[in-house]
Image 1 (cartoon, rainbow, N blue to C red):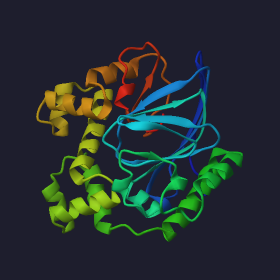
Image 2 (tube, rainbow, N blue to C red):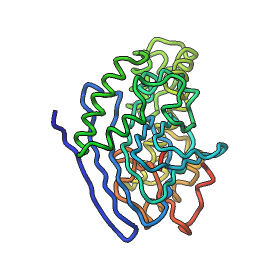
Image 3 (cartoon, rainbow, N blue to C red):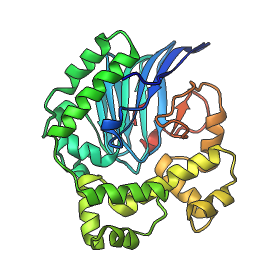
Image 4 (cartoon, rainbow, N blue to C red):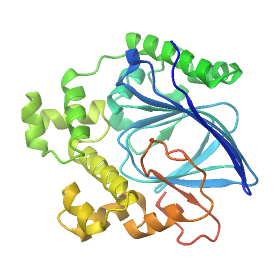
Length: 311
């Protein structure tokens, strides 16, 4: 099946980059949200702050490792990376060269693929081949096979085939969890947890237990992430903080600012200004049309890296 692959090539004083973005085949959706191929060759190290998003991330690295730091944990240096749902930011750094494919998964899809209770992986970054319940094939071998293919379209086609096979052999997740997650996403995290539990026919305690197992975060924490994701999108589109707070269901602007600081390491104003600053590479965000990250430039203002995503 042919697909639309959007490829962006560019160069600037700091180096060159190429991004290739495509939707997965319908047979692996909505479990797989998107594919994003990356080839970056910069003139020096690159650091990027990644904010929490409503997805799990699987980076299939071709050669170069990334170093990922998160508050309270020792840094991890990995070529292929799995990052489950998180409520805290991370900083990813590479030496100037990075290539691979970043796959965004619905959090419940990660449970199906890895068969590991997702709360064990929340707020962590791990080598997918070192998870207790491995996939039928090693992720590192798949990454090598992808690197050897001549085009992004061929690589995305191989991913479709592999994910379809892995999902067929994986651990089934609850249909109610899938429904509840879809409703949380649809509402931008605004639906109250008791109502969400009622809609899928569970008690709040049952919903919380299944979310921790198959999403990685409880429903309240997941709603916080999705609400802030929506707020970042509105702020990036030019909405004011007070209006954004009201639309997204925060008590007031101070509540929005506090949540922003807790989950990104900076205030809404700092985040917005840093997004406009020099040093950015187009299409660096993990989700198309979303404000998910900041390029951290030496001497470029506040140091958010101590908040300790993939950069």
